[in-house]
Amino acid sequence: MKEVPFSEAMRRKYPEWVVLITTIDEAGKANVMPAGWAMVASHQPPLFAVSVGHTRYTHQLIRVQREFVIAFPGPGLEEAITYTGSCSGREVDKFKESGLTPVAATKVKPPLLAGCVVNLECTLTGELEAGDHTIFLGRVVAAHVDERVPGRLVNFGGGKFALSVPQE
Ligand SMILES: Cc1cc2nc3c(=O)[nH]c(=O)nc-3n(C[C@H](O)[C@H](O)[C@H](O)COP(=O)(O)O)c2cc1C
Image (cartoon, rainbow, N blue to C red; front, side, top):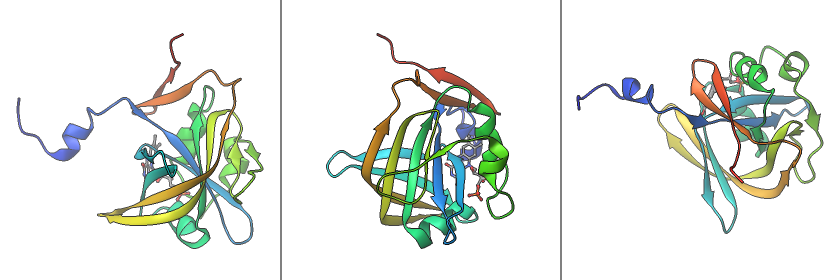
């Protein structure tokens, strides 16, 4: 056992799950970014938390619009994850460029994502400042499953993903 900087230890944390967060601006233009720092926070009421860097456009949109969608990406979305995690919705229309397909949500304005095994519609219910990130706590107001999607992607770092499928 040897003591190392936090950043070096974190290079060995993989695999970690990855979610896609969709948001929307005042004019109704949607944005999307991947996040690995995400967790279920409560069953009752249903809460999901995600840690978003202060510099992200997503951070600004969640703060202002107070709604977001958490989607668990299925196979085939590897390139879209890498692309949407490498640029900002401030500069580009990520839906146009990534090939991701938005689907109308039922209770919030940001879209669900096709090709995802789970989509959670969230309204912002709390925030915790966490250094250079903010942990946003979303109240899940609607949950959707697509049974045609066989599983969800897990992230191994360095742009590498694998499909995680439950065993029968
Ligand atoms: C696999 C992956 C996981 C990521 N996880 C997070 C995360 O948990 N929190 C975060 O703030 N940024 C995370 N990022 C970085 C953001 O997705 C990236 O900065 C993105 O370009 C922000 O887009 P936006 O400015 O349109 O919101 C991740 C990127 C990748 C590729």
